Length: 281
Length: 276
Image 1 (tube, rainbow over the protein chains, first blue to last red):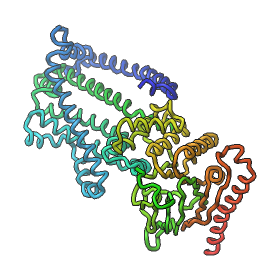
Image 2 (cartoon, rainbow over the protein chains, first blue to last red):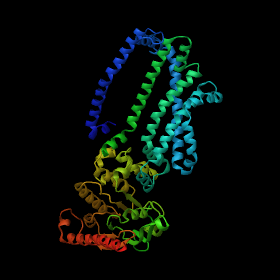
Image 3 (cartoon, one colour):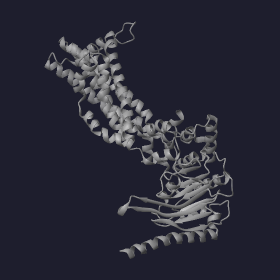
């Protein structure tokens, strides 16, 4: 891998790093201004529903972290609620990814299936996924499988639609090469068509990750006895305003971490794509 | 692989008989190839030239089995072509679109070999030797986007050679590299051709290149395409970028071929003027 990093791309890499640090220097002031503004505004308003940031931060640390040596850094509340949320998110999104990619390939490669299922895909995409929550409860009860189903169903559409587009957009020259070189169907799928369609598939996966995050929270808000969503709604029911804010903040940070991890993987896997595009420009 | 080779006299490496290709039907039909017949002897280096718009690429796709002809037959060493053949390998014009950018040079060369279920040692041996044949021994782990255009086309040539084809079809392979690289690649192909037992059919729009490389030239007409004429290139081998090109005979052949190709264009212009 180190040999790959060297060579013709050393200078652009340095440029990227510089851009990123410049970006951070540009973004930090806005963040600080917002935080200070909130703090001053909340103190001035003195509303019980809009607590100052310092109180939220204090509660946030107390809720989710601990110093007790037995429980590695995170509090019991974190383990009991954040981990189930992450688990449901990961399971639902993984199912969405696999089903979306497989169905997408079938639809894209079999023109008659594509024509026949087109109205279904449009309908499925048009249904706002949270609307399926009551149905999911009837079908799967209140447990985690209901949440995984809801996330998988809602998050599948961006993957499906992007996979169809990605496969249909594969350069005909690539397809001709596969035929001329007589590459066997299994390798043609995993080593040619899948990577060739992957730039758009990854775009779909990125969108669906956002959808999945929304859906896990919706499901936990309305029908759960654990999870960050449950913590938020439970705090609200007990007039614990700081508790709701602390949960919302954790969700925001979870979103950042999850998206960050995804971008990290995407950057690695899609390196050939960004570099090829750079080379042809 | 080539167990039935050499029986019953010299069979043509490539035999094309009454090849016709029509796109569409009725009034809107486009007659790309009208009636093409020719043969290529085993071990020959044949260039196919024609004015731009002649069905060069269509012809090549029919020869390689990627496109079914409307009528006529193509055979490779006597075996009729019904689809992509094991005995034939194709090098496309646009290396940037025919190589797989997510695979290294090695990965690109290996993929078709592994598709054939060859033993790992055999795959390694063929990959190593074909990359060595195109002077890319030290570049196995480079990705296409880390290479120059000339290197990428050499990977594409190595990928074709690793399949040990008896016939190599090349579709304007050097059309998108710079002039200097082009000379290097021309000599590379000539060296490879002289060292291994392969018949080359080289499609190009470049008249100099056709004369420099080949022993025989087929001149295609504008569509509906036929073989308008054939020419023998009796220049001595091995050829050399300087001495071959300064040979007066090279100039005569080049001029003659130029006249024929340009004549076809003038003829077609006169014909369309007459029609209107």
